[in-house]
Length: 52
Image (cartoon, rainbow, N blue to C red):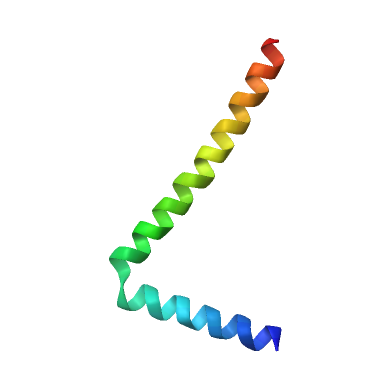
């Protein structure tokens, strides 16, 4: 059942990207920006930790 659900979700994702490329790109860009911000914050944390 999990495998079928995974394939259905993948199909729906590909269909959404194919029919709405602009909004899909915006969502992907937002996710990438969020992940980049997380890693930037982790780096800042360790820099501040090492500086005392």
